[in-house]
Length: 222
Image (cartoon, rainbow, N blue to C red):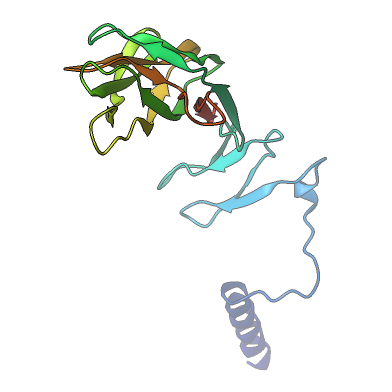
């Protein structure tokens, strides 16, 4: 009777230990996990342990969702970006809308190896010249591959000889595009509209630095 009670107590204690918490001081080693690199140990919905082999350098681990096993994928996100800038040369604008004149210096061609987000920023000054209308109505437009970008345009009006005289004005605009791989050319153009005298774009005649303006392009996550 005493021996039978001892056997029951031993079995019960073993089951209690197996179902309870495991406290280990130090490292746990399993010969079956020994390999030439590091493994990731995962558990499925039943609690069964499994291993995930090491990925390649630079890869990231992606969740497989509920019930799915995680997996490695290539990291295609770049932490760097490319910057391009061209500077304006003062250009006389005498063409009237819809005939545009390209502002000298404000043209940039870029080549994308993959699709990317493109941020375009351009700025400069205009200077009204002539005294027929007393003002210059200046229209500035950014082009991509000889096509006007509708969300990258603005107008500036200078007062040339009508009080108060404000012959020099500044302009700036920016936009963001998402483009596929390939070669793309951006440039900035200007024209008159309405009753307007000619004007300088990308500079003026009165400041110490007569060439004023730039086209700046940032390629994000190429």
